[in-house]
Length: 238
Figure 1 (cartoon, rainbow, N blue to C red):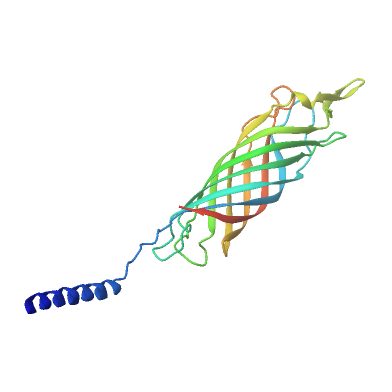
Figure 2: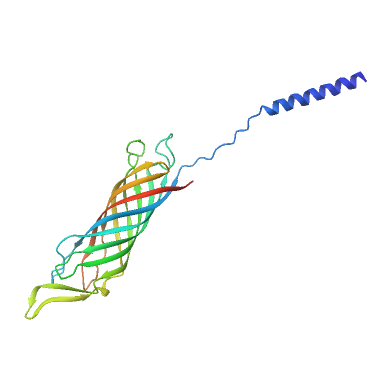
């Protein structure tokens, strides 16, 4: 009987010790590490439109027109600048914008030509100083811009002839004959100032037109210099 009592006492002590040891166990749950950041926000700016190529028969343009642009921008910045940097501070990023752009083309006629485009630039950004704290937001960018012509004004454009005929001083064109779009080459430089959960960005971008406005009517290409601001909010990490 005494032996049974001692065995029971030993079992109880061992269970009590195990329970006490179990209470001291600390379970460590590993935290998920994110490296890339998705940002979305508005962008607005102003532009200066120039032309390349001049028709032989009539005097088309006389200067640079001022327009505007505005829409929504999105960006994915990949990786970290250094091992101790925050996520989304790496050397490369991909960006896209969907915006309305008004291009004002100066002419030597009675009216200027106003063209409204739906612009969709798709850009690869390179951050050469991503490993530094002070210049982590400096970037250069390049990529295609898909421009769809939405509006045009006036309906008819009257331009003076270079060599007027007797009784004929100008020629009139219907702007409805213009091409419906263009694929441009976009390139630029900018800086993103990182704030709490968002970036304030400023950039200068040049758009090189690849297609003539109209082969027979206006055989000239549009080139645009754009200055813009953006406010991008961090919406996701992965």
